[in-house]
Length: 282
Image (cartoon, rainbow, N blue to C red; front, side, top):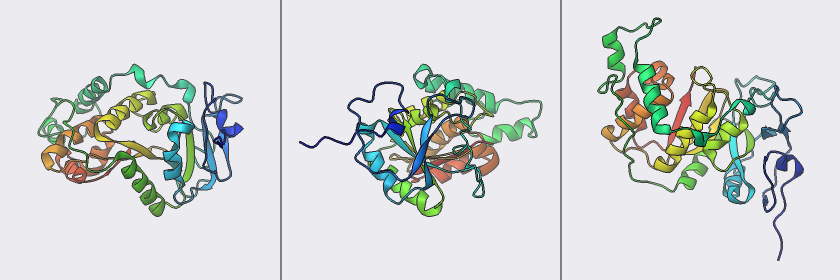
């Protein structure tokens, strides 16, 4: 019997525990392990390809995750002309500053964030009536976690399809590999700080993503300087279904509404039958 190829040394270094039994039967393009710029000499946070990700490689690595323990990511830079490929190429990440995703209650986090973002503040440019209109019909009342629509497609199939779409539209995206038991945790393990203007602990974001993985068949596929792209196997089919999901999105990433659709209802229309969710934090 032929044994599976063991992990290369630069990938074994990504793990905090033993890599015995882990294997990777997929060949990788040239790349390197990246250490946080603030933790020189420490354990690498992730592996990064030197060039854009080859077509089809994300799906093959995704299929290997159970054996390798490595979650693949399509990584985008701050801008196309960024020679450092921030935040990935220069190690602008903080894995040592993050807590554990398992230490946070996603339902509680979303409820608290909703309360914070629907409240009036000293720098508010909206009148109280205008602010309530943004999150109508709920206003300031948190509607609770959304009911889950039926699955339309297998989660892995949705993820593989989205990866190819992203590469077709963003040919400069590089491949990243993170030692993580699930995609939601890869953000924390890599030390990503995209939502830092809202939370300094990415483990809180990962906790919500764990819930979405379980409830909506979400899979983490793409990650940028402050952007996140997920595949979804259970998108809403009606505006009513989409509206409660939109409320979770507002609590998770209010900039999607504040600097995008402007109202929860308009944003919900965009979610209907959409197998991908994208987020951007200012």
